Length: 117
Image (cartoon, rainbow, N blue to C red; front, side, top):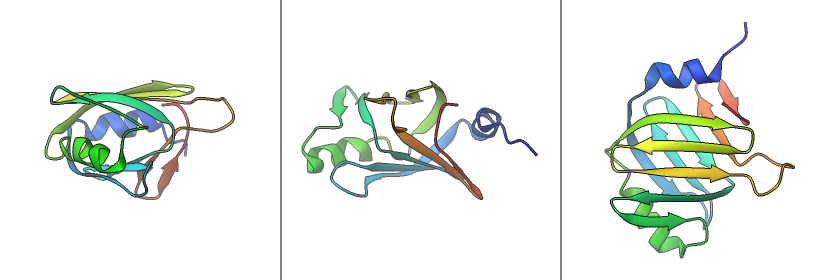
C-alpha cells in the first residue's frame, strides 16, 4: 500500500496545535492532532506580528513558538527543500540550506516521513 503523505496531512487539517516547543536549542517540535513535525532546517516565520527565525536566542524562540499553541494549523504546502505552514495567527517557512539533507520530518502513528509533500 502506498501512503500519500499529502492526503494524510489534508485529512486532519485544520488541526489544533497542542504543543510547539524546542527539544534542543535549535530543533522545534510541533504536535497538532495525531501529527508531529520536527524542524531541523533553516526557518523563518511570523506569529502574532512577531518575527521568528532559527538563529534566535533559544528562550526568545521558545516564547514565539508557544504563541502557536491552541491555534489551528490550517494548511501545509511543500516541495523538495521547503515546507510552508499556515496557522490562524501566523506562518512558518522551512528551507533546506543544502540539498544533502532534509530540513524536517512529519510524524504520524506508524509513519515517519522526511522529504517533500
